[in-house]
Image 1: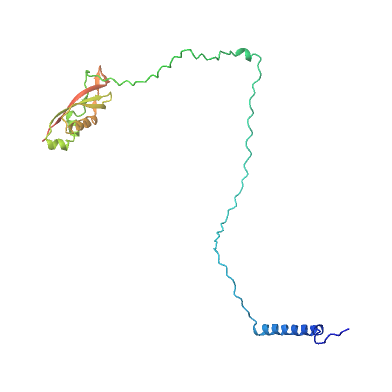
Image 2 (image 1 turned 60 degrees about the horizontal axis):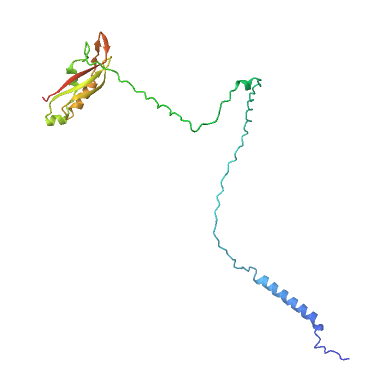
Length: 214
């Protein structure tokens, strides 16, 4: 049996090598903590989109209790009658499509009758203040003045029972705005109502209006 060489036997030095390595590593750590106490590492910054949030105050709603619905009214029930069927007459419900149906008559149009005005009565209406009162209300048109228009305008006036002129129209005119001026003056004039047998009546009367330049 051969004996191993003590220099080639690693198990004999294994324990001592482990102890030396442990002592050296501890010495390195102590030196590192003593001379380099603050070791800073560069931090990583991650940039990203920033989102803003707005917080709203939500008002708390109050739930009101509704009153119960009113009770439904009772449905009236008619009492049965023995002679109900005897009073009902059932007619023929068949439709005769060949029968001629008369069209309904057209609706009647109500035509308002215009009041009648007398042409001649015992007392004819006359303007209060005479024809001169109408002449004072006339404004001579500027166009007629420049054109030198003169003459008479005849107005037919419809006078009611109260002496008011309800409407008027030009019978004969001379133009240049004189017809309208005469018509407006007559409509603004009050008349004494015409009379027949002492009773006021509606009368139409012709009135001459003179246009003359001074």
